[in-house]
Image 1 (tube, one colour):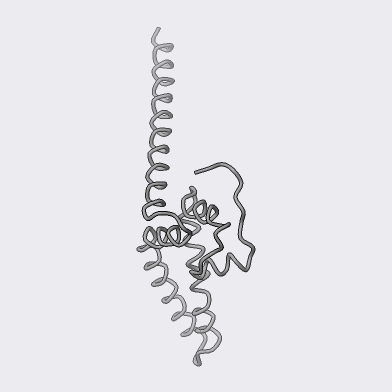
Image 2: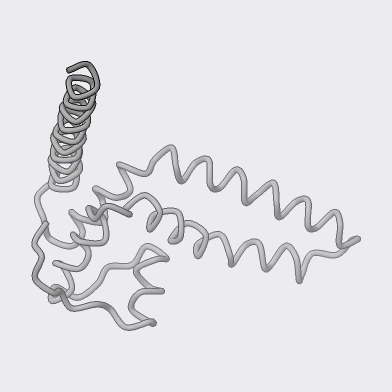
Length: 142
């Protein structure tokens, strides 16, 4: 994506965004960056953990019973929540981008382009490494 600096949300805005809320239009470029940068998957998981923190806290602090049972219930909920969050990661990310005012498919195209560029760079690096090995082989056998 663009290398120019983008306005970032303040902590309250980010928390609202992490919980699924929309951000003001002046932060649309940041939403696109957040959902298409190299670490977009990790960012998605962090947002999911923030969303899961509320029900986990309720289970741990409010539900009666022995703590170990509450902890196991919270752990089970955390695992199931993360499974569903990861399973729907592309759709959720695309929805955030559309909500920020971009056309549907923008995040998917950005991810595909980034993947294509990474593959090109990996291929270039493999060819360079093969050329270095071939040169060492020729030098050794000359």
